[in-house]
Figure (cartoon, one colour):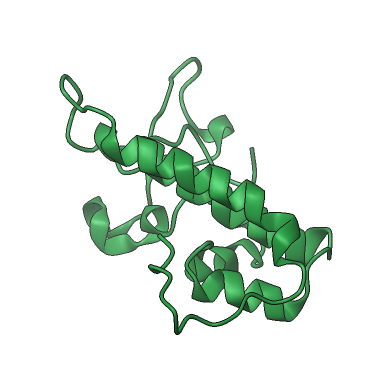
Length: 147
């Protein structure tokens, strides 16, 4: 979530007005997802939409800077500083084998049995035929780069 804007906040760098509408739209979606009722859902399911929107925001900033090269380094750093993108997740996307990673929690060994990784990181070829998998943390259906 971006920090609350105060009078002392840093002025946005050049080019911010081009990406601001998209980021504001995603922030509005995030706000709606946070306020949506969660009756009838399992406890982790309530966070799945929030993780999904968080991933979209981080991917948007990542692709603008690294893939399309449409924003400056100053604007990229500003977006990360204001929490419009997840710095740790973007750092993982730059490494081979993690290009499609859904969230950092899926590769964190302490959150899974036997110190492994999440089931969504296993390539689909190595799973049983017809078996539908879904991450219990974020709801991902498979983010292994080998798929």
